[in-house]
Image (tube, rainbow, N blue to C red; front, side, top):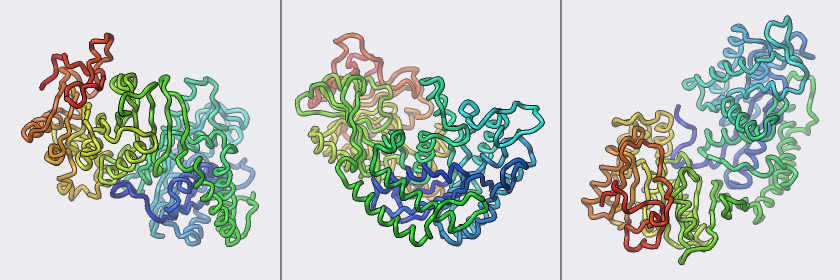
Length: 571
C-alpha cells in the first residue's frame, strides 16, 4: 500500500482528521497525545483532530441481550458525522465490542467485516481517505470488570467476558491487516501492544495494561506513535514525561482540557444513540473556547523548557541529553573529558546497536550524536533535516564543526547522501554493512530480496511511483560516487562477504571500485563468512588493538575498535 505521506515526508500544512471508534476512541487520550505533538513541535501546521468516538459502539450493529441498552451502531450516525465534520482523513477503529465478548462466531465475524467495509465505502464516497486501525488486544490478566467465563459456559456478557476473548480479537485484527486494497492506510496496534505488554511484564511481572479492555496511558501513547508513523512518517521512541505524569505538564493539561471540550461538543452535535450523553457546550461556543485554549497552548509551547523537550539522563555511565528538533528526536552522549577540538561521531541510524566503535571513541573523548530520521531513506528532505541538526548541535553544544558520519546498514544511505551534498561538513565516512544502492535494498531489483513495504516508503519519500522508479537514478550512492569523490572525503567500510540482505557485490564492492577509479581514499574491511549480522568488529580486549582509525593522516588521533593489523583489511 502506498503510504499517505509523500515526498520528503513533508507534513501537510493543513489537515482535518476525524476519529471514529468505541470507548477507546471516546476516551481519546491517544488523540490528545497527537494534538500535543503537533501544537508543541509543529505549530505552523494546522492539524484539526476531531474525536467522534462513542462508548459501547460497534461497526457490526450487534449487541448482546444483557447489555444495559442496545449498543450504538456507527451506521446510525456516519452520514451526519461526515457531512458535519467534512474530514480529509478518517481513522476508524472498531472490533473490541463487535465480538460482544463471546467466543468466536462466523456470523458475528461476518457482521463485523460487512460493517467495516460498508463504512469504508461511505467514507470514500464523502471524498475522505480511510485509515483502518486494528482493534487493540483484550488482556484477561488485567481485567477488572468481574470474573471471566471459561470456554463451554452457557452464557457470556460484557460484564463476564469469554476468558479467551483475545483469540477473537486477534482474528479480527489479522483480517483488518489484509485490507490493503480497500483502505488508504492500515495501522497495526494489536500485535505491537501485545509485544509491549510482554516486554513490560518481563520487567514487572504483575504489570497492569489497563482494565483489560481499555489501554492505559502507555497503550494510548503506542497508538499515537503508530498513527504518527503511518500517517506522517514520524518515528518516535521516547515517551513524553506527561504520558505517565500528565499533571506534571501545564502544556498537556491545557491540551487535555481543550480535547475534552471539543470532543464532547462534536459528539453531541453529530448525535448518537448511547443514552449516556456527555455534558457539552454548543459546538460554535466550544470552538471559540477551544481557540482561546489553543492560543494558551501555543504560548506554553514557546517556553524554553517546552520548545525542545531537553532532558538529561545517563547512558552506560555517560551523560546523555535527549531533545526534540523540528519534531524529531535527537540526542547527544558526552565523554567524561573531551578530546582536543571536541570531536564527535554521528550515528545516522540504529543508535546503541553493536556500539563497539561508538564506545571506544566515547572513552577517548568523543561525543556521540543521533537524530531520528528513520524510514526517510536519505531523501533530499532528510538531508536538509540532517544539516539543520548539525548546525544545532555544533552551536548548542560547541562540538567540532566537522563530524565523522557513521552509516550503519540503511544508515549508510543517509550518511552517504549527506556527505555528498555537504562534504565540507564531514571529516570521514565510516560505513558498516551499508546500503549503497536503493535498487538493491529496498528495491530488490538485483539478487537481494529487498523489502516490498520499505520500497513503497522509499518511492514515496523520493516522490516516485513504481511506474517511474527508473527516474530514481541519481538518488542512490552508486549514482553519486563522483560527488563524494569531488569532496575528498575518506571512506572506511566494514562489511561481511556473506551478507544476504545487502550483498557486497551490489553495494560495497562496486562503490569501492568506482571510488578508487576516481582517486578517492577508501579502506574496506571484509569479514569472511559473515552476513548482515553481527555488525562492527569484535570488541578488543587488549590496548594494542586500540590503534584507532589511523588510516588517514588527518585522523591519526581517532581511536576505535578497528584494528589496522586485521588480515581482512584491503588498502
